[in-house]
Length: 310
Image (cartoon, rainbow, N blue to C red):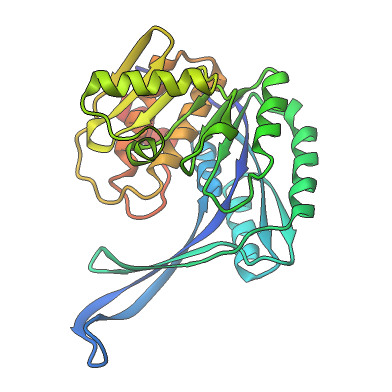
């Protein structure tokens, strides 16, 4: 299938942003101090993570993207603001002086992740209220809203935001977190991965059992659809009255981190353009197949996706 022109699509991405730092190096010996490898760092990279990676993926597909989130008053927050601006994203990053910008530092040796170190704390109520007010102001200028919940506290008012977005007639997509999805009630679609889904509905014994549990969850939360991304088992979309399965795109899997960001960004762009769910998840599945072949939080460009679809 041909990839639609997504340049007219306007997306508002709201959620927890973070800075992904990578230290790449060589491993040639074990430390004499402890049984751990010694990594001689040779280069460093910084990439937008979390909701910022969703925004970056959507922008790489050609969509017009606004990002609403918060950062700390620190060097990591400044780096993140610079990176998303360079990616062509209209970013509004509210500064909370009481928090540190969330940073995930990954140490990579021989193309393998050896260690991840997280720096994070929760934002203040005042900054969150200011973000909610701006959300209301930005709503009329978008076709769809994506909520990227990484459980860092930036989406305290998500229930209110979903109600406002749905009342304004917007498509609402949520990448969820945690074991209680009640806050996402009324969304158009939520996109848990396999382990996140198990956390909420329990283990299923077969496909019929998964369908029953997914349908119950969708009905309870009053969702239009529920997409479960299932790694090597592909994706399953649960709609009222039918289920659509997409097989995983067979390729060498290098790194699954950030694949969920690519899926929801692609899904949002397609849905905002007016694609039906079957086409939207097919394109999102192909995009996921491309991005897992890249190291770290990465994006799929419009050209890469168009070529793969052809």
